[in-house]
Length: 210
Image (tube, rainbow, N blue to C red):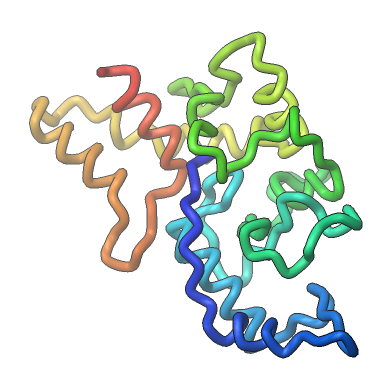
């Protein structure tokens, strides 16, 4: 889970929200294109086009707007951009519940659900070379519950992370070349995209070697 810094770029959405008055209190159900697409595009851009939870690549067809504190909570402003993220959509493993936002559903516990908006969210998780994810601290109940509820440890996600790690295990690079390779991966590319499973690569090849 990579820390997300909110960087809203939604002028049309803001104008649409400003039309709200006592006769029509807008909700998320009223949000349609082009304003809805603008919101989703802004969320994807600020996340570097990776899922807010598992860090798979986001595409227009495999993504949805996720309310971190769910819309089912009557206290939530469903049009609050600061509560919106972009999560992957497709089911990865048949016969299992969907992962990430679709697995989380309406579950929310502010003490047990780690938010990608928290500055220290990355430090709650550890990764191994076989692609598996674990709480960085065994006594971290929030990390354990977050992994469980978002299904961040299902087999196919572990396989995807392992495949992302494999190119960094190539032994033909000297120390400087390897450093450039890792640092290059951790930067956004010319399209504003982060590499998939950013925190996995950062943890294994940066944090554990410093």
